[in-house]
Amino acid sequence: MRMISFFFCVFFLASCWPKKPYLEQQYKKVLGWIPVYGADTAYKKLTYHSSPKPMTKAGKIYVMGTTIYQNDIGKGIHVINNSTPSSARRTAFLELPGNTEMAVKGNIMYANNYNDLVLIDLNNATKPVVIKRLVNMFASYNAQKPYAWQAPPDSGYYECPRFYNDSIIVKWVKDSVYQSCYKF
Amino acid sequence: MKFLFVTGMVVLLFSCTKDSDGTMNAASNGSGKGGSLARFTIVDNNLYLVDDASLKVFNISNPANTVLRNTVALRFGVETIFPYKDKLFIGSRDGMYIYSIANPESPVLLGEARHTRSCDPVVANDSTAFVTLRGNQPCGPAEDGLYIYSIKNILSPTLINKQLIPTPNGLALQDSILYVCQKNNGMSIYNVSTAAAPVLRTRLTNKVFEDVICYGDLLICYVSTGLALYDINAAANPVLISVVNN
Image (cartoon, rainbow over all chains, first blue to last red; front, side, top):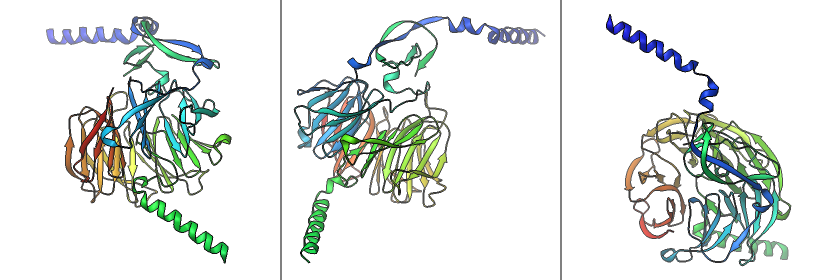
């Protein structure tokens, strides 16, 4: 009998949980990430560094002849001289905010600068330039698996991003946020 | 006659460069080679891009005038694209999709293998597709493992083997050797000459392996700290050459 009443109680209590107002859950704040937006003209650009930069967060790789390219997630592309594999080393850095992808054919590199596809002419090794930009080629947003530039660098709750025509998320800062989006 | 001779010479020369450059095995069209986690791939004069829900085709024969030629709608959750001959293998969170690019600007869906929700890069050869499924958050509930599909009937890929291994990620295939990255769990190297019965040959355990490219006798690995390069003259026994770290 005691058992039954115990179960009854648990059952009773449990039935309360879903009835907790939805908004109350939504408005509970926790430590998480908030996006900082910036004018996209300041970030949709290529800056070439002729000296190697340290890797922040290693990303995808691509190989062309004796050169290996490695993405630094959200930051750009490291150029690695692999003419002698035993002494392969970084030699330069293509700073390209929001970058995660690249491919090369001939002297042209195809890469993303946030959601734009940019074509970079590598002919002049000391001054690669963007020769073509196709805007907004990564159009969608998937809350389950956002692109690198749509989510904070580490796991946790974050304020779901909004999308504007003239600005993009340029960084994430720690702050108290509502439990809206979550990165695993 | 003179014209024929010149043409003949050009063809001969071309065949020489192609043969002598053994490292360009999968990329004889003037482009390089990407890993299995890539969202971009170049086949001849076209760049293929997958975003979360579509396959986009760009004609790049004149780079400065690159144009978007086609957008093929896909289901949500697309993550990777892998080219093999006149086909594209697309890894998405609910399955593997095979498109024909016999008509390069108009990809046509040939076959698909739906699976439990997961993250899943794919590589392939003429008869087999190798897919890794990683079922932890946020990927989905699938069982972690290497899933091997026969694609002899390209219209309906069939599962012929699976190896349940933890946290598989990027992978690469060279001849009969398959390299499977397993993040914190290292890398497993299989002989897949009989695709339905892969044989584990070696495991590398001292690095966090994310993705890998076979490039002639060089194994180029994307590891958590940067790059690791291995000699694969003995294909199943990679020998570390160097690391490019911070």
